[in-house]
Length: 562
Image (cartoon, rainbow, N blue to C red; front, side, top):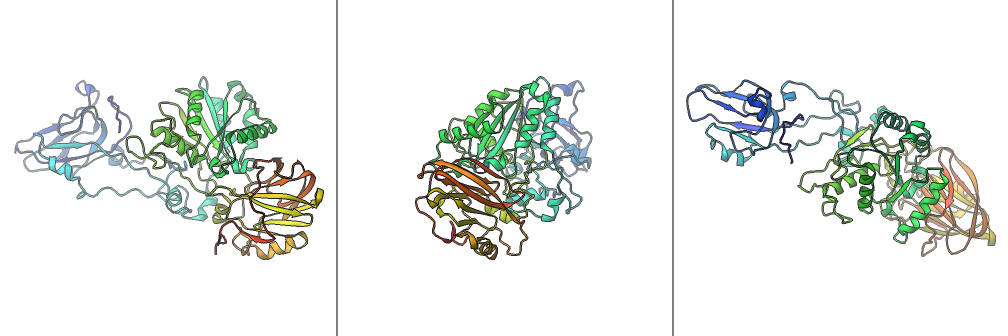
């Protein structure tokens, strides 16, 4: 741990163990506070001893390089001597509490009520008998009898919600989720950026490439770009398409980049928006993204990271931190990338990652995000898109939402669908073929392998879906769950080839279906009224090697969780 040579203002914890000196006469042991101590600028912590009593605290002050003990020169600690010989922070000695925020989600910490957001338990202090044997062996070596040791880094303190998510993958108290504070990301960003002058501003928008239309924050981007104060500041925008590792290997970077530019052009975004293809899980594209951010931000710029819930924003930030901590080498996967370790061996602060939507709750200051840069970076809460199946607005449980989020590479499920046939996608959506040239088309489903399907005639599709929900068709897992009624939307799909898909119909938060047709066909898609359906160019025009048969189908055995 590097500690500056000048007196520091931050509070660090240190331990010092004192032993009665060999002389029965009163003695004084002083740790000087650097050059300013002699002139009265800083005062040391002074211990006065007598022949009968133990140490008595006479003063509290920041300690500079100690002349006694075996503490290294150039190390400085702000600490207070306590009765019994241990050194703790001045704030802890005075019984004060410093307002702090959870480093995992950004919520304000509190230790008063377990039933309120932000609750945390104070970490237990080290017991007196748990002393390092190396310290005991060196006691008494100094003539003054004092030994001061370099402190270990304080452990990060997370709220109970983040602790449960990080260690058990679920929230500790689901009832508290409704009490979490709301956060208008667009308004907060516009206000903060507008109030900062003379400093480079960069917006990093994280988008889930497997749910592009559902996760791209249209309204937030439009609101930011329509703000006249922000347009005058010439803010740079980078679009990071995350979760690249979930697409098949056949999806080349060139194909994806060309497709993404076409989609961005249709959204009326500025032409100078940079597009980066990344995978936070695999580390792909992280060096290129870090270099681009460094170039645009400079040494003292500001970076604002935002994106929809479950777009992988926190995962991407943690990937950048690990890459920065490893020294920013040229390798795609640094040796310490997955271990979450710094080059020096210390832990890298990590945001909380979970399939639970809305993990981040407030602004979180990001330290050590870019190697060698002194820029200020901030994470923001995930933007709530009510039109996504995977948002907090969804009637699905957290377990069911987790089933919709792919955990392995997407595998296509291709159906040769005739007119009058339907494909049920779990109990959440359905696709009917109304008309087609040649009486059939190829429909390929791309979604999580935990979602089951049914392929059969349209006349029985609705009844079959209602009967099998929570049993053969999942999610949802609960047959009694009251899901919103499915409503239909008709799409005319144009294609020029039978051997590959031409257009997609995306279902926000669930996946998409690709249609392969030579000519024009009519598709009727069913989903809850609140869920976004979007027609676009095919992201993955490829078919599966084998066609699906009529009846129930699943990609994973026993995917229905009882």
